[in-house]
Image (cartoon, rainbow, N blue to C red; front, side):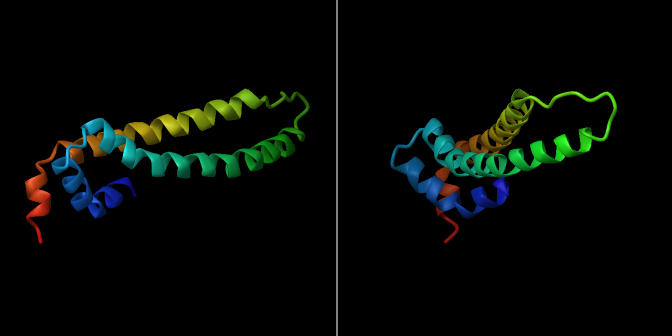
Length: 105
């Protein structure tokens, strides 16, 4: 999904580079959308996962309590993985020559 989005916005990235945007600006612009999606997905998924885990663990004789920090750590890891993946692709797109992306048309 990240690669598809960057491919769709190649011309926009080229125009922003020609107008003086830095690589950090471009990576930030591209990462805002995906981080919002990952956070919304985590907000939806974490309560469902908490409920499911509590129901499943209730059937065991020796059970543990599911703490909030376990889900926070899982959400944080999802955000970090999304950022690493996105940053890698965004840096590649931002480092490309803007003339090549604008010449296509």
